[in-house]
Image 1 (cartoon, rainbow, N blue to C red):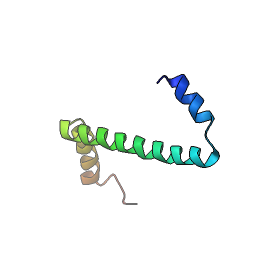
Image 2 (image 1 turned 120 degrees about the vertical axis):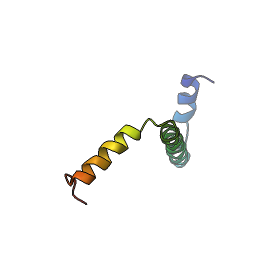
Image 3 (image 1 turned 180 degrees about the vertical axis):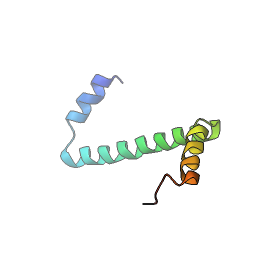
Image 4 (image 1 turned 45 degrees about the vertical axis):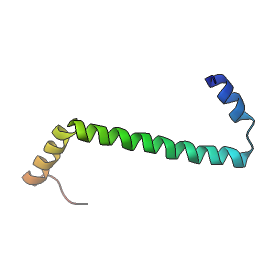
Length: 65
């Protein structure tokens, strides 16, 4: 199925069905995002950022919210 066919099918949805699709899409997108974050954590991609944050906290340059 092409993107054009998907767009056409979506345009024919009722408001209720469109809302259901939007909720599913948001959940699906969030799930993909969480998978990416987990992969980045496991690969060490975020280690440098965490180290910088920890250094700022330890130096006292960050105030708690």
